[in-house]
Length: 421
Image 1 (cartoon, helix red, strand yellow):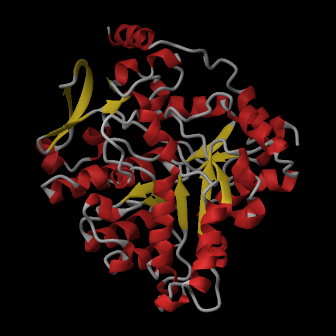
Image 2 (cartoon, helix red, strand yellow):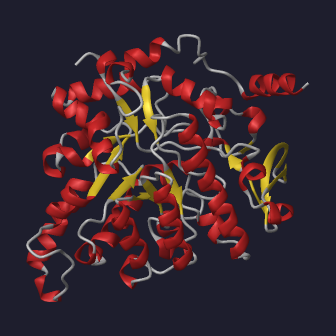
């Protein structure tokens, strides 16, 4: 397959919420208590969100796109230093064009990838309002303004199951195709998947055909590292969080209760899946003495994986070598824009090289790049944009004016301040 003929959909990208999101979508009656931008106490040159007495900023690794690598760090950053497409969705679509990407999901930043930050705050009425405001923007405003460019993905006020069920119904009516929930809820102080706490949410998502996305993040605390361990240690071990999360949901009995439940494992890679399935298969045979059953009748762990899961990867040639064990239909691709793992603006080149090295057929390439994601999320990639206009080549052809060169934080700040004058 020619690289320009590929169609690419990313099932894991991120957004830094625009500065006016809550001005536009928070209830007017509560506006005096809405999240507001203030000075970041760790760096007075950049902004942070203040809400319910807590101040939360964005770390540099959340928005490194187009910075020279020498400027990457965990230090706080703000709108002035970011590439504007990080928070401006009109410009984001232009960056997607320049990278040949047809569509993506948008995971939250300030609320937490799965709304975990909002859930940690004391006034749950205000957290509910913030959750709904974010959803009105990310599921309502953004996809409406850019038809066919985003797979609508929301969050839930999971601290209140009844309100979560109401929000699932509301999001479904808005066209939502996926909802992000904590991948290891007990890591955030909430009951695990086996507790029954999540069952009403699972049932409502199944009713509407909505996929639950388990994005790594909340489970970082479960991987204990020694004092003084460097940042690389955690970055290398992040796929372990997806292994834990997938084990939790697989052994919870959820698929016995809800055989149609769909789970997307976000940003966890695919290399861990094959040996994990081997271990599960061995366990149910060799450790049958435990008497514990967690599978739908007549199904193996591999059957459940192939029927109920979708995993994604950025670059992982060894994972592709196990695609027959996983099932080719369970593998999708991600860009991870604008995080430090992202392959923007050379995603097509990097992905195609790995697919070729793994001797993937054109059929397999199409499945990994867009067909699997479209089928799993119940989303038509060509409803608004004809296939011939959705390819890498066609999208890049209309974005030749997009500047994809490295640009320093200070240069972005200079442009930002100039535009403000």
